[in-house]
Length: 194
Image 1 (spheres, one colour):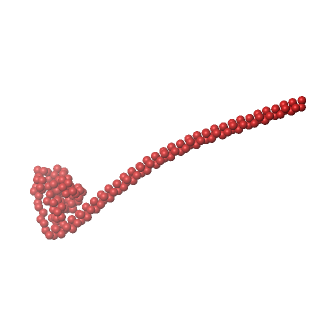
Image 2 (cartoon, helix red, strand yellow):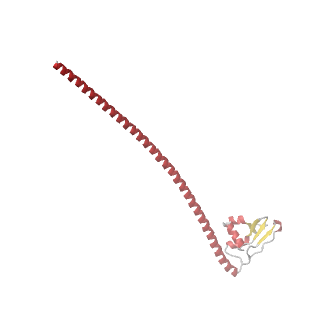
Image 3 (cartoon, one colour):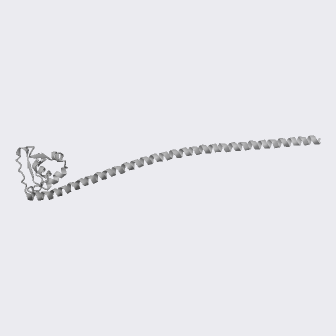
């Protein structure tokens, strides 16, 4: 096998920057002849070069595939250019270009869709994280405020108890002074009348 006659499909993908599917489409449409050697697909180099230069051969039949071993290799026939083939080739090339554009747009759509889904998932995770963090912050603030209210209530309760104690002490003092005054008044009256 000579390198000028055939090119492996992977090498063609790299050389002409097309996808494997594009070359398979060319093969299926009969635009590129192939040989299958040891279960590997090889493309006729002349056909691929002519196709990449805008010439579509009319003599190539759809799905023309030969299967041989490396030892049984044959020489590759060349394709003749004709004006009719060029006209057909131009319209076929236009269809191929449209198909490639559709494939590219299809890939862009799915890439964009995947990007959007990834962004939505990441945003959902961010919102969930933020809501958990916000919930924790609110719970902490409520706990702090409840503790403060309990402390304030405790202080108010102590203040009320102190006020009650003061009132009781004041009341006792008043009762004592009233009793003492009464006793003194009684003693003064007793002394006065005696």
